[in-house]
Length: 490
Ligand code: NAD
Image 1: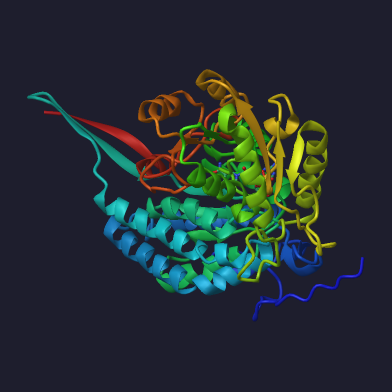
Image 2: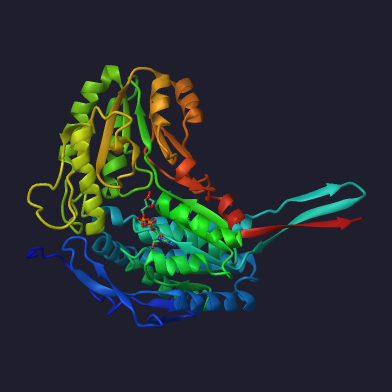
């Protein structure tokens, strides 16, 4: 296919993407590489080192050495906190560069990529503060015993991350893992390895000791698999698809590893007739079309009370048609290019399937003028029955299914009628109903009359097929540390 798109290439791209092990950028032991594609042209723009078991072994060895040496694992929380704050400052300073790389590599609209540095920096600041404020439990049995909790870093944490908002999601694991004194081996997603390389320079400049952070690029089934199966990695924090999570769960079982899994979703937004319709429409448009719809917590099923259903569908479709698809680097773009041609094919096949399962009211394929690249027009299907695959399965693109309901009971039944349970959004002005609904809905996170905004102190994670364990606030500290009980006789 002839490519006609001319898009700006960020200045000073590396010659190739390497691993970063024990403070050095290195190639794979066997020299193997894989191609990384630009999501607009689908041309390979760089090669990345394809890590295998030998590279993982080397990275784990370096991480273990740094851990045993103790300058980080035994440092006082205040000392670690200072380094984490420096990391946050540097991340924020480099926000513009990060946004440029992220947009180029992932297809995310530049205006949305610009917030990623700030969010990543906040993750470091938050854990920098939390570790100095950390209190551990002490229990007294008067006259007999004092029992206290001794919290210890675990060792080498394996961090495996997905391609959506890659840098920010890496920070979500790196910050608590490092803050608590562990060493890490990060395996970023193979579709989007570009921005992960920034961590090396940031950590060096902030003064993180060599070997505490290690990065191995590569394919999930090779590098990721070797990390999961490494006997000296007692902890795996994974974000990705539910089916990959299931596989990792099985592969980690022989070592009984600590696992934290943030997985897929098919989150409902429930709109009752008494809701502020304008606010609900704006938020549900944002909820599924921002970040190209490549968002784990996307509100990809909208359930609407029948008395406002026709009006909602009409207004929603009209607004979806106004969402601007464009080249990721252009400031007016609201939906850019999907990350990779394989993912484009997946989303596109769901769009085609949707035409047989629901009533197409907006989008439905490539937007006009975008004959190449991974572009999909914001697509809305109405009247989608719950047994439809587009109601049940995660599409992870700018595609939404709308379904009517008659009663609150039916709304709840529809909301819970998938294998997933990550997020839910409820729109109603009935206070009692909103709280009761929030408590009954099977979702790890619920937003009431609210956009998806994070409070870093709250748990983040899903129920059912959407995850295992919750991180966020003290829960992350719990995951990345062992809590030893010490009993003293008086
Ligand atoms: P994915 O499961 O294909 O890959 C995620 C990571 O796992 C990648 O680094 C990949 O290389 C690695 N991997 C793949 N197979 C592996 C194996 N056998 N062993 C070890 N590692 C392996 O997911 P993706 O397509 O990159 O990301 C999209 C998915 O992530 C969606 O389902 C989305 O909902 C989910 N996600 C969830 C959250 C959340 O917090 N719940 C956040 C973001 C994304």
